[in-house]
Image (cartoon, rainbow, N blue to C red; front, side, top):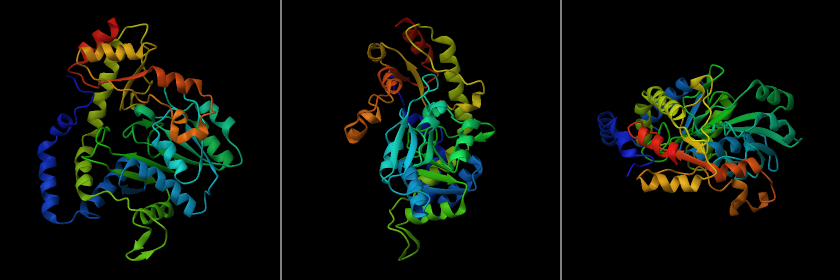
Length: 362
């Protein structure tokens, strides 16, 4: 069986460094809010280029903490609207509704899978307070139009950078394009922990301080609670692992780019639509290599018969989920088409030729 993602093999590449560091942290007796977390936050801030970084428990918390902090600061209030891509992992939308904000779903560009920037302005109302940009599958999404909309309507730009760490556009890394960004270090991400972990990067010191306080039970000083907070802190073990792997991220992203380029050059099947390669390779880190096919299910079964595991990201759009019955009336044909057609192939060079042959002849 060729696994879609072999986390054991991915992490064994860094086995010696990780095991040594885990033992060091274990023996230190300090497992939260210590030197490893401080180093991780400093290094991620430097890598992304954002002045402030807060380690949190997971990527979902990173996003919901951003909105919660803006509410506490009076920038947003319950009932305000946030524009968000309709084609995304549901956590992007959960973070909005968790804070009693209203998600306004915008169709994606069928070529890039990201939000169609040209459609955003038509969805802006007097209640709109933010645009969430999701750099889906690892491809950066941004343009001068986003900056124009931000200034014209006094909006916050929030990035869901769970899948695109290391991608660059207009000379900046994703996670440093807007006002604040959420990161996920779920084990399967390009920069993955050994469990759940996340972070927020942002431009504003007051926002950063508010997020850090809310994430620590709403307490900046022990036993003094400024907010009705929550518990969302990265632990020392995860911070240490991410710190090690961060050193190798750019090289590993380059390897993913090469695999994607080879797939795009070698797969030749009129029934399989390949993702588009950006003119600037740095705009995509290929967290996922996603093809489209009207015969998606048949193709997936054929690959599985040959022992090749594939995944579908994402088979049910958020507005079709039982959790969001209030959105069920929406008609989002491109989003629904993608849900029916997308298939993610393994990002593995060793079995690329086999996968290419099967997909080309399917």
